[in-house]
Image 1: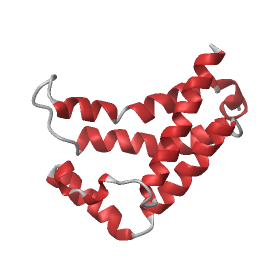
Image 2 (image 1 turned 120 degrees about the vertical axis):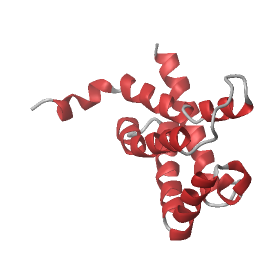
Image 3 (image 1 turned 180 degrees about the vertical axis):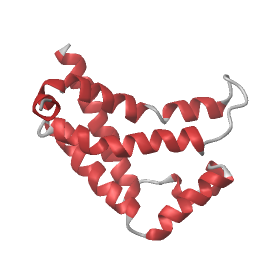
Image 4 (image 1 turned 45 degrees about the vertical axis):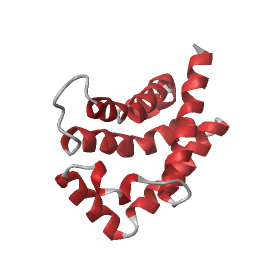
Length: 138
């Protein structure tokens, strides 16, 4: 089980470092591609992008937490900090993603992939549950 936890931790770390790189413009981002979103989703993303601070802030958080996962330092804290971001990402794709016409369509697969960061983060939270004992007891 320890190997599984390490694999999930390292995959999550790499994923969030790549997310940070896309938020800082090092890698391409879907934020500038209107055709990748529904009209409602594009309106939401455009409004967030227009603020000028939220995507860079998410990038900083993703980078710090990704490095924490990769270095195996403060993993429990990083998983808690990333929870609102991963939940928002998944819920965006549930409510504002492409309409799912068919289980076998490309859009269904693309929207399903949006749950990968959430599942990885939940797995890390579950594996680190002993670290949260002080938070959950009165």
